[in-house]
Amino acid sequence: MAKDRFNTKPGRVFDVANVLILIFVGVVAVVPFLYCLAGSFATESEITMRPFFLWPHKFILTSYQAILSSRMFTRAFITTIVVTVVGTAIQLGLTTLMAYPLSKVALPGRRVVMGCIVFTMVFSAGMIPTFIIVKNLGLLNSYWSLILPGAINPFNLIVMKNFFQDLPAELEESAKIDGAGELRTLWSVVMPLSKPVLATFGLFYAVGLWNDYTSPLLYLADTKKWTLQMVLRQVTASAQMTADQMQSDVPPPAQGVKFAVVIISTIPILLVYPFLQKHFAKGMLIGSVKG
Image (cartoon, rainbow, N blue to C red; front, side):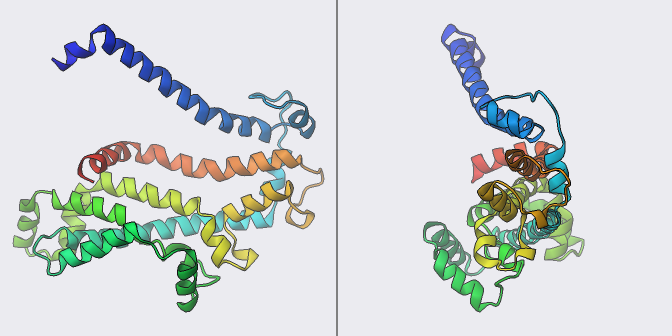
């Protein structure tokens, strides 16, 4: 019956309208990125004379050469990769270790803990109290200040808890009969069955750490510890990098440098998605149904 309903004229009109809307949204999202990509290879005069283009008249690599020769950019790029990889592993691990015991209905105090978690979703301390806590813990000017304050996302925790709770209890019981403890059961039985939800929230944590700008701005005073987003902010704000930050004989186009930094800072996180796409799509469906 559902198939016949969608084969009717109103159903086909609805499908065509959906496709057109999705195409429009896709174009709106992709075109600015393509403009940045084209501008990163264009000369300064072309960027100034042409308000919009998707293909430069002359391709140059001056902007990328200047950025890649910058010690500040290279250091920030490596720092961001390390913080993202380590932070994602820690945040995903802590979320998993907290979600698994909360998925057990017989856990003492489970309702109280869940109430506290839901409370944090509604009420947050705010920027200043969080800064004071980070300062009192001695985390200022440390990379841990970028990872630990947001180590466990309440929404991710609740969805992961619901996912663990819906797994067949017989599998865990079989593992315990074979002598496996709780951690062994989690590692060998539960986590292999949880690849979709782990991939989904791992990607969420990684994107959040990679794009985080507020935390480095608040907690990192040493410019040598800046992440990529801080360097991106400096480049886009000043329109060019200073001479001691770049080692290039030919002055790079100021606007081209902006575009090139945006492209370089965007591509790495985009390259991660194809490897997680299969699990990510399934994990999003799980979250929408059981979250």
